[in-house]
Image (cartoon, rainbow, N blue to C red; front, side, top):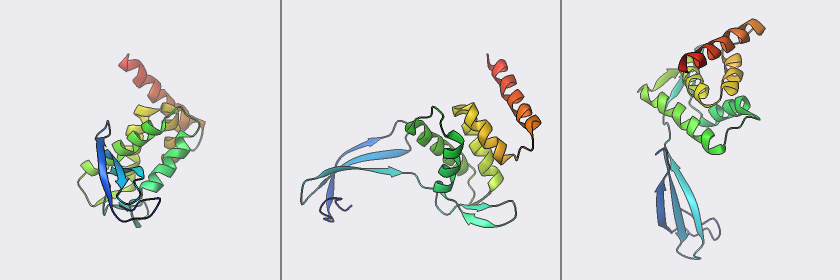
Length: 155
């Protein structure tokens, strides 16, 4: 790992800590030349996962694309950066559990909606409205009624 200050190629790990959800490791490093200390993060990465789109096109899985869509849904909602990160990890974990090298965009959307519903219902409705292509207010009402009904059942 290169030092971000002097660009020396050798650093040593001073401390390592696993995140609370166990999906990443924070490492404190020290440059062996200038002594500068900095942190790096090691995370699980989905490798060689191909998404099959509705029209049959195939494209490589992109965490950035997933995050971008979720950020739009979660905009101006009380979701911390840490909670958002855990949401991404939960979605990716669900995708990994499928144990396939190719999955459909529908499977990705379902994993997103399942996990987003647990985090924030407003963000869930925003995402669902685009993913499910709501056509009018009746579609919104139907989805809201499902959420309300499920909330009553849990009480």
